[in-house]
Image 1: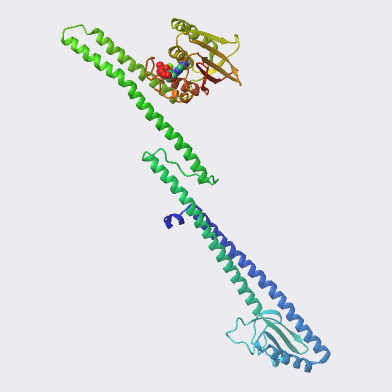
Image 2: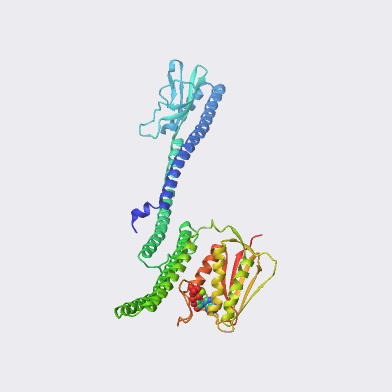
Length: 456
Ligand SMILES: Nc1ncnc2c1ncn2[C@@H]1O[C@H](COP(=O)(O)OP(=O)(O)OP(=O)(O)O)[C@@H](O)[C@H]1O
Ligand SMILES: [Mg+2]
């Protein structure tokens, strides 16, 4: 995987931004910490220095100047390393004893450099906390160098820098890992899409059951790919079946047209052959019309499905017509419904009429002599339920889904008339009306059940 791609990935960029924010916060936190550490250490050392000054002052009050000169000289020796400072100055800033060579200018508790006898320029600092004040006719100065403060500041600084560095390093490693992981998933998606665009409809994105946004997108895309491959398969089947179904009438039309031309050449009357040609062309027209109608229904909006249609009246009228056709075929057709009940649906009455005609036509066409057809209209679960049951050959369970595909017919000998578009239209019309169609076995025969949303 390209490192540049990983570093420009969303996960790594997000972590990089967080790391930057973290460093800024750490600097701010470090600055505040150092500020408070300095304040409190100077306060502590100041108290200490003040106490030492008070002790020497008390000694001065009780034992006199001679004693404190000894004490200061002793203290200076102990503080030869320049950590401690003490000195006594007489009038006109005359040095009397101690390790501070020049009297500091200001009196009181101060922070600043002192002219210490042992101070070397290499030392960490020349700054002291010191207290300078009058003691009798003299000035006593007691101080403590700020080494501790500087060492503490360096320690805090090093600790913050090291922990900040380790935290940022960990964040960037995690970001790199996450970014390379999501990039791998994106590559999967990219590859699946490019294979699909090359025509491989079987390819899918690997799913790991995760819950990240990429996992959810992968699942959604797989669902779309499933639907797309189903659509492509149906379209391919439909195109092949349409070509197959159009081939026969086209071939027959071609033959009878040839026959008509021959008859004209021989001076015979070509009317019969031309009528055959016309019949074949009519068959092709019906196929095209039905297919166009199917496409129109599938593409139509819902704007014109706003008429209240009384299904009972609509079905009763069609049953009346088909009862005569069934009778001619040696079959029976009955209508079973609760008279006076309301079976209204919202929709397009012409489409709904077409749906009922197709189902009645199927029952009669595909049923044998003696076929008993029963049409029922009722309510189920707040929906209008309409069924057409017959006692004909039925449809095997394995084909119950495929018969809804355009041009799909079960009868291999094509002994029955039809183009295989009737049930495709029934399903398209039912679904357009927010309804469903289901096929069931009538043992023997077929039950087609249509459910549509009922209105008041
Ligand atoms: N009531 C039925 N009994 C037995 N088989 C049926 C029945 N209805 C449909 N079929 C089978 O399902 C196939 C598809 O039906 P569909 O209505 O879609 O097409 P068709 O009846 O062959 O032609 P078309 O309806 O376009 O004139 C039929 O060819 C037939 O084999
Ligand atoms: Mg049909």
